[in-house]
Image 1: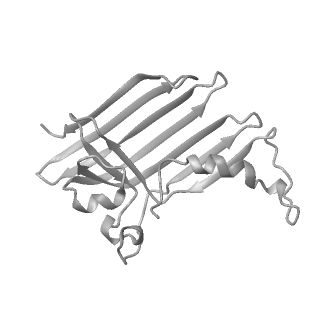
Image 2: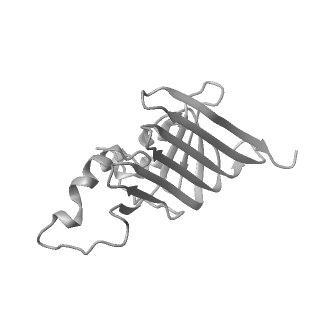
Length: 194
């Protein structure tokens, strides 16, 4: 089974049921958090992809190993990562949550073609490599809406020659009925020195 490194819906279903306070064998005194649960999860890498035909790309952040080397993809090599990827999850007693994924100074590999499956990247052409950062925040609001904000970027050495500054920004909201509103959505790959 392949691991999902960006989206954690299963964690939301599991975390409330696995609180240390529910374990009578090793109870842990609650930290001063007004009843909120705060969890920090180490993430080896993140995958971002865009299926918009005008963009059509996938980027890995923090994955140094080629995807074909990963054991989840049938490889036998070690999974080498960088960037210190973490996910912080805050769940309030009311069930609302706030998630923040982040990396900094992480290896970026920028691929042609969109896929949500890291193993498929073995067959995708690499357009550039470099380093950069990524922040991804998800908030469940009191009105039942869900906001998602993403900001990622870095400097890439392009396979075709030259360098480029990559920047992606997104800000979307799903209202309580599931309707999507896009407040901001842009991606640029701007050549440096031209």
